[in-house]
Length: 398
Length: 123
Ligand code: FES
Image 1 (cartoon, rainbow over the protein chains, first blue to last red):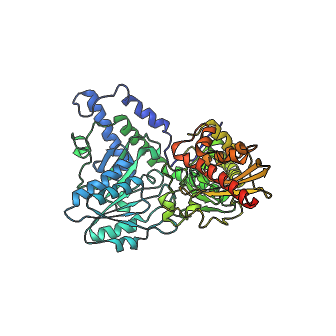
Image 2: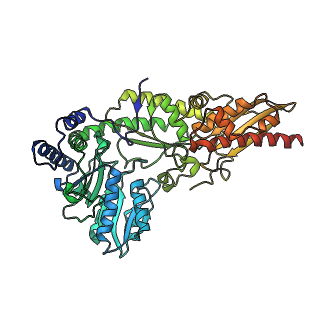
Image 3: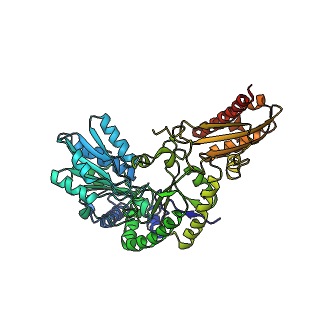
């Protein structure tokens, strides 16, 4: 059966050219980059070359890039590293309610360690109002960390406006750009951020390679102590093949970004237009300010996991933020934050397109999706409306 | 993550739909994630002769509904009352741990349908 991968926000396939670039570093070029003989020097050179192209993708300087093993690590590093480096100035941090778990859970950890955290609300599209950032500031504020783009609802946040506020007050601004780098232009100068997290597997690089951008001169306390790797800011023998892969993927992403964006946007729009033709299907997140390959919906009267399974049975792979589809059986906090009631959040589905998605794929999807909706609605007691639902079972908004 | 049997009952659910002339109806809401299962039974001579369901929920919940409606057909009310979440899960060759509560939903909705029948009969 042909499979159609519409879960690019989860991860992406490795680009064949990226794999090619990586292979020698699994084989003959296995040297430790700290060694002073030939294979070591070669490995060191390869890492520095990768650092250059990784930096270029976000318009940073190579020395501003610290390689990490994941976007989650970069986010942990940014929050903890900045909090601990600046705790003598103040102990207040601002994040939004729609951050990734790696930001939210780190913020919660910092709360337990004596920091105060404000969790900013978002509007019904999932967008942060920069004025709310301003209102949340206290004398103690040291760090603002706002996600650049939401993987769940595609919303692109007004980082530029928020950075103006941060600059005015002399505060440090971090953005989790895991879902945006490689999908839209991301320029650390234009955004005005001091730190930015991103990961290679979001732009056809390997898993296990990611980076934290730290503006030149920025002080950060390491998460991992040890040797002098990454300028002493992230110890541990480098994952050379993965870093080389990230560098190559960054080079390709920079070269092809516009082409990739234009292509997926046309297909994505086609998908959204068609999906909304079915009754009681609502778009979640902003209609305009969203990632170009991102489509997310709530489908009324049916549940997300059931949709995913039936779609998968038809070869289509996608994601959901419904309670039933999550291990913890909790609806996605992002959907709750944009004001979606629990029974509607149950019908969440997310489709994210990528480089290898074709027009044919989308045509097939457009044919299949409405069939699956009507099949599940045929089973649902609410196919004709939510009568009797309120009060009985959607009281569980955790 | 699901057994072949769960996938079979989920993708080809048996006994789907409303039953306008049902003798007993049981609706159970899921306190964990907010889903709903509705079971209809037809009874004659203390035996369940037919059963149908409507479910708003995950793949496991739909499979459980399909399975419970299959299992009860031909059972006496007392026999049907012995169906538990464990026996339902077992009939489906097991459910993932975080999905065990979905089988609870099936057993509870069935028991409610039987109760509803008894109340309507004045028993
Ligand atoms: S009905 Fe929600 S997990 Fe099964």
